[in-house]
Length: 103
Image (cartoon, rainbow, N blue to C red; front, top):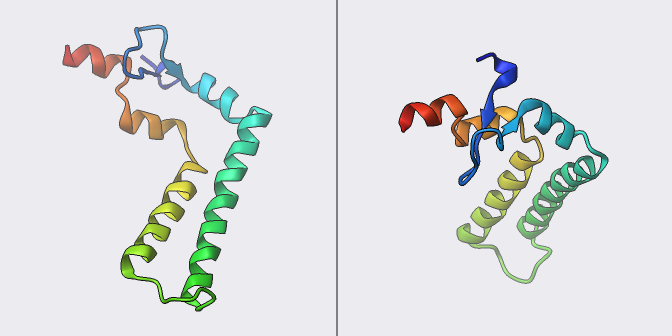
């Protein structure tokens, strides 16, 4: 199976219902998807700026390490999602070949 034919299955999907790289690229470059990815990147920056404001004392009380950790986690999650690649799916979901080998 060539790289172009790799297909990732989501839980509950059957062979032929998976996601191929061409499908992913079509979705990723769709105008609505572009807006969504832009939102994720912009929101990550917004969260980072909120954290900086918090650290600079613009809020009434000093932030705890837990609160700062929450901001870091949110920033990292949105930043990572904003650059999602097809291979990221493959690192999480099995390919058809991998699924058939495990059965």
